[in-house]
Length: 295
Ligand SMILES: NC(=O)c1ccc[n+]([C@@H]2O[C@H](COP(=O)([O-])OP(=O)(O)OC[C@H]3O[C@@H](n4cnc5c(N)ncnc54)[C@H](OP(=O)(O)O)[C@@H]3O)[C@@H](O)[C@H]2O)c1
Image 1 (cartoon, protein in one colour):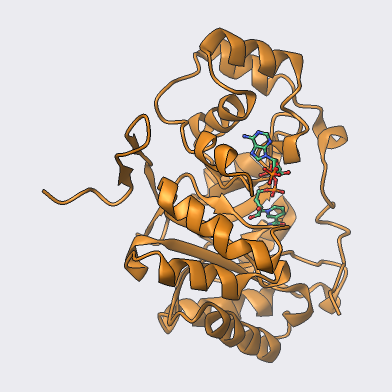
Image 2 (cartoon, rainbow, N blue to C red):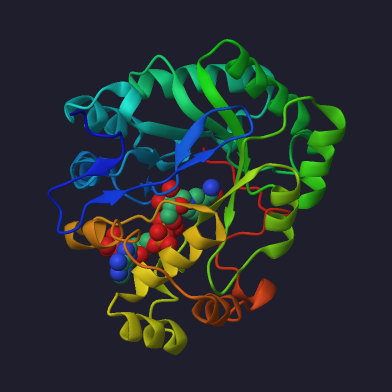
């Protein structure tokens, strides 16, 4: 009998990763593997380990400088291209339409793939390009029309940015990838996403480790006999968001995968949600002012 796509035996517990339906009819595995801050020289090893453990969704970006190594790991994994969901993102220097077209070609060449599953505008950059992210979005629509991007979406878009796309374009982003974790629930953007059929992807889902020592998280983890990271990742998936924790530590890559064989009850969910510090909990850059352009 054939194995269902995301099911992996061999680990201590067989795990099935749920697929989430996107507004364009495609599906995406709810748990993936993030490669931000993984050096190119370490990327093949980390992604190969993740694929071996059972992850079937990799989140990279041109800005991370490791697209080529992600592509290499997928190719050498022995898996069919269609079994692995790959996301990349348009870098900040390439928002002008012609630059975006060239950048997308470079992303596919680096990955050595003829299509990508999901391509995102990495940051809205409202203070650059005369505040025009609409023309950039229309170029991503082209990539979807010509079949080289199966799905297209945005990252770090705030509610006014999303409203503007809704008013001036015809394709609703499939996802919005935003910072979200127990210290920064990002509820206003999540609510907009939910109401408009945009799936939220939560970046830095464990706040790069900063929420793992929180007494509430530790207490719940001890009660359930799980690790703090598993509890926090489980909280995200029960909220319906997509997560792709990053790790270069093999044991943690395994640990972060084992989050579909237990549940948080309503009380535990609420205790974690109440850790939200609002804006004070934000760890990364603010999308309204972020204007970094790599040279
Ligand atoms: N769109 C955007 O603007 C944006 C921004 C940031 C991130 N992202 C995406 O989101 C992904 C995840 O976010 P992130 O990389 O910022 O942070 P993260 O996944 O929240 O945390 C990664 C950090 O936590 C550690 N860690 C991982 N698993 C652990 C565990 N089980 N126990 C203890 N520590 C653990 C890792 O250490 P080791 O590696 O040493 O194990 C690493 O230092 C990125 O890789 C990227 O794909 C997107």
